Image (cartoon, rainbow, N blue to C red; front, side, top):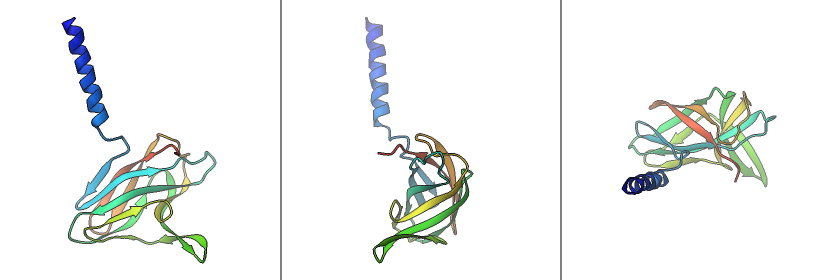
Length: 152
């Protein structure tokens, strides 16, 4: 009886430990004073040729940096875009870089700045993960893993 109770306690503690850990898609990636948090994407239909990626970019340092390029093997081309409403119409335009001022957080999110995956090499399906390389002017290249989240 005592052995069974010890096993039960171990199982309960293990379960409690698993519940306290952050979710798998809550990853943070750091290079120098830059922190990229929770890179994610929505699923895309099998016939889709484009997708989007979102994340948060925090600069915890005293010096500004700049996101100048992005690449991924899952797309022929990766671009940074900005969406804005101009004269009542939503418009999207490519931008050459994203500033990361010292001590600030930039949101790469739906309806604003976002990453476009152009020429997908395979469909984005819920639960899949894929690599993304972010190139910064001063900090260098940061490799992150993007999680495709199920639509909610």
